[in-house]
Length: 207
Image (cartoon, rainbow, N blue to C red; front, side, top):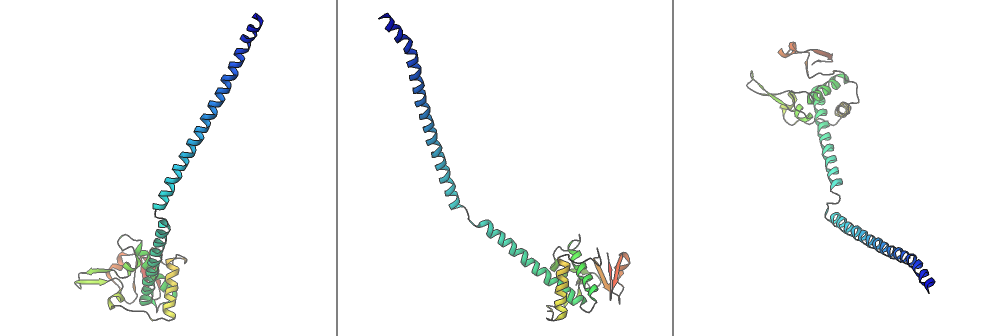
């Protein structure tokens, strides 16, 4: 009997260790299952919030805005080229090609200069107060003649070609930095204070 009791005493620790281990495994699996369920719930809530946001978000707003900006740039480019070509046409269509390029360069150079407007059309149509005449006069005299329209022909097409080349900066500058010019038939007072850049055709160009 004593031997059997001793055997039971020896077996009990082993049995309890096994029961504790088994209980721990069951408890651990339960925790894992709970964590798995909790994780799935968090993912589900996150997915619902994300989908709700996507439904309310302005889908396509960014592409539409990008298209609008691109359309604005394209329209400005078209306006700039039109004004630049008109200035070439009315100021220099009788000049050699180099002279037409030079007039285009002066026009575009002014958009980068401090004391001039910063768009091509504003530069072309700029006026200044003339104390002698007591009125505003145009920098480019043809703009005072009302709404002139160039004739569609070789001269206009050439003006558009030159305007595009100068606007896109694909030509080698002929009068770098030039902001002014005048016909060789006149000698304005301001010319003596400017540095001559080049004489092309019937125009003299200055910085």
